[in-house]
Length: 97
Image (cartoon, rainbow, N blue to C red; front, top):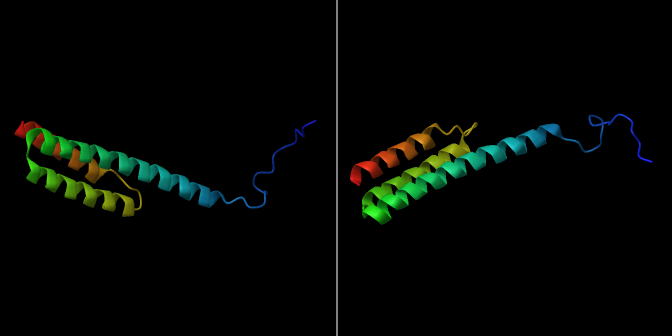
């Protein structure tokens, strides 16, 4: 039969809760930054491919790469710059249509 005693999670050998939290935080941050970067790239490609404004596409792509680097290197990975970039690219897309 299985032992139904209290689990000894805090005293288990090899248990590193701080490393687990750090890995989880990095995963959430990188997923959020990557998703916002891909959305920015898609809008930049829409501006270049659909409207033919390849100069705006180049600027949008460079800005998305810069914001991705900033987001991944920041402590919290807050999406303020990325969301601002996406909004700006959407505004340019609407204005150039």
